[in-house]
Every structure is written in C-alpha cells, then in structure tokens.
Image (cartoon, rainbow, N blue to C red; front, top):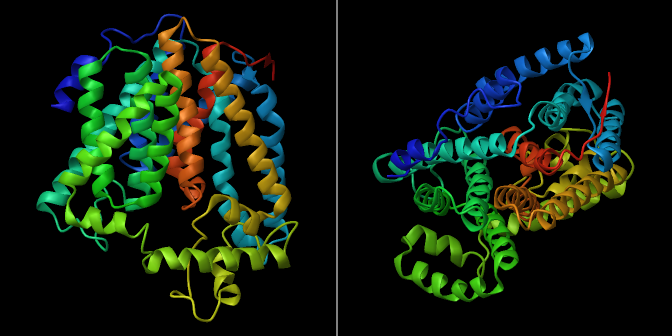
Length: 402
C-alpha cells in the first residue's frame, strides 16, 4: 500500500526543476536513494558528484557556499581529528580510517547546488520511498526469513541491523515532520510511517526507538501541545499488540540485560582512555584495539569495536577538544534549524523541512547516547543531508568564489 501511494505522491514533472542545476539534482537524488540500499554504490555516486562539483568550482562556473556559523566548529573538528590521527597509537591505521572525514563536504555540496524547497521536499519523499522498500523487506525477513529474535535481527538491505534501524529512525522523523506541518501526501506518509515504524519496532534496537520517540515528542510539542495527550493512549494500544520479542526487549529497560550492563563497562573504559589521553585521544578507530587494556576484568565482553556513545567515543578517540568541537557543531545546527522553523510560520513547506532537520538532529543525538551512530557512514550521510536543510531553505549561506 505504501509503495503504491508513494508512486502517486512524487510530484509529476519535477525534473528538470526550475532554477536548479538538473544534473546535480539528479545525482543527489540517486545518491540519497542508494544510501538505504548499498553503502558502496552510494559512496561511488557521491564521489562522482563531488569530483564534478570540484571541477566546476576550479573552473569558476560554480561557487562554494559557506555554512556561516557551522564553518568554524566543522573545520575545528576536522583539524583535531587529523591531529589525533597523526599522534595516534597507530598513525597509519588512524589516518586511513580518517577518510570518512571527507563525507563532511556533503553539506557544502548541497548548499551550493540545491536551491528550491520543492526540490528538498521531493528528495525527502525519495528517502521515505526507499525506507518503505527497506522496511517491507525487513518485515518479509521477520515473517518468512531466519530473522526476528535478538541474535538475528531484521536488517533490510543493510549489512547490520544498527545501520538499518538508524536509517529508519531518521527517515521516519522526516516523514513525521512532513505529515505534521505540510499536510500534502497524507495517505502516503501515514502508510509509510506505519510500515517504517513497524520495521523499526521489530528491529529490536532500543537506541533507535528512544531517538525516534524523543524527536516525535519534540515535533508534536512544537506543533500542538495537546498532541502529547495521545501518548498514553498510543502506549496502551501498542502494549496490547506487541510481539513477545519486543515485550522482552522493552522489559530490558527496567531489568538491564547483558548488553545493557556491558554499556556501563564501555563508559568506564572510555573514561579511563580519556583520563590517559585527554587532548588527542587514542586515535581514530583505535578504541577497539586498546579496549581490552582499559575494560574491567569482570566485564561481560573483553572486546568491543566502539563505546556505543557518540560523546564518549569521540572523546576517547580524538580527545576532549574534539568532542567539544562536535558539540559546538551540533549546537549551531540546532540553532539554525530552530531559526528556520520559527521563520516559516506562514510557509508549511519550509516549516515541515525545518522541523524534519530539527527532528533528525534530536533523534541522532539522543540515540547517539546509546550507540555510536555518528561513526556509521550511512546514518552520517542522512544526518549531513538534514544538516544542510536550514541553510538551503532561506539562502542564508554566503557564497565566495573559489
């Protein structure tokens, strides 16, 4: 039903968009569609987009747009990350892992090439459509595949259930904002939210649940405080139909399971790393290598690739100044999204987009207190797309010739 509705929801004849650089917008749409299908394919398309963009900038046919207040914390985060890699326990390995920093060029690419709210709205609808496909595949895996329990969770097109649930979380927030503030494509959005959130629920991923709920509550509160009165009713309705695996997973909030207890040991190990390496950390992607040295002897697991917490992970990997730059950047994005939201009271299209950007930041931050989602390239690309929205909406970015 969601797929049928989605084909009717996408605007007819939106390409080539008036006033847009059509090839770039086609490429961006293709890249966003692939994020939820294949990380390799999406990064190939993104790499091609960036290469063409840089060539045009060097030729002087395109200008580089600034993110104003976000430029400094972003540059500081990159500089401190590279410095942490150079002084890493294993500089060669950390420098190789630092290639992921190149993704941070995405907001600059987007604000330089996307100009219309209608284009942004359609890009969001494409994300929702692809999430529908991934969610339906996940539901098929739950019903007919060898997935569904805690050790074999549904993952759609993704290789890992955490990536899958993080993407579903972010896209569900964008769709919810469209439903609350835009009012168009209501049938498509309602059907999509049902499918996406059902798959998210069955993914058994608590961090994504918490992030999605936090963002939904914030968006509902901003739309109309009375909507919060529906929360207890919806909670009771869900409780009556929850599958047993979901019930057990919810119960782990009250009676922490092994993974919940292990997170306490991860935080303690991270604090020890920070205490020993406060300025530059142990090096990007080195936490997993040194974790057995710092974790308590009675921890359930002696090895962990990361610390399941954005703040602690960045502090342990790159040092306290770098995590401060990251928090500064998040604060700037929240302020930009909030300002866009306030300035679009008479503009439902812009308001829905600004609300979606705000919701993705909230969900990503809250979920990131329990999962290192900023280290996940797929979620990071979705986050960076959402980050660019406030600057695109009102043309607030200043442009300087390269």
